[in-house]
Figure 1 (cartoon, rainbow, N blue to C red):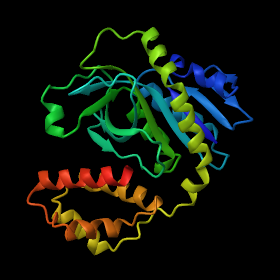
Figure 2: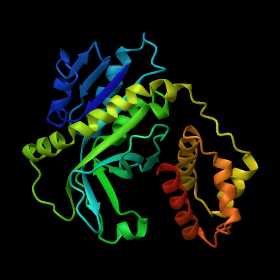
Figure 3: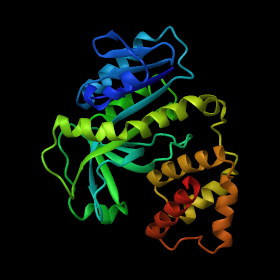
Length: 287
């Protein structure tokens, strides 16, 4: 089964009609013909976590090994060069400011959307203007629910079964008062792309759950790669997600690493150069 969850009903009102869903409970809708349900969690990390945990807790008698959870919702963004309002991003990293931890959703299936990290906190977050330049990112997102959803869902589902798709409703270049009407508008304009992503995920469910999660790469080669990139634990975790995705696309992670040595890009002189190389590899894998 596929479960879609969102903080606000306004963010996914189009989904109920598109998949012919019927109301099951106050915040839960279901389509038997499509085997897809919609959970409205409410705003905030605690509400989101409780709602997701309660839903899957009621499923404890059902086999969840092939279930997928897709969190769809609006978010804010900090950006540098151009407005990204209306852009859809697949989340590859969640920075949980409440717990002071980071989580890395697996990237096994390609949604076709750009990737970004998201800051998840229980209050409105604004970056220092220099942060983006330091992080090396052109855009970083922020919301309240992602960390709560991830922590709750990961108790019941495999890591690569939890997918986050975020639509930017306001950003640092165009920011003004955000209203429900504006959220409805930006989400409605995104509904066709989001519906296609959901359908693609449904069509590729068998591929997701038949994939061997173990990388076909020599452990010493992998350790040497991380050492020569001066990679932190955070950098290593992020790169492993890209390598797993690469192998589902028929690209051998070991061949990718060897190519960097052949090109003379390894070893890197410092951590900054290693981070830049890893980004290049990630872009190559996902393009």
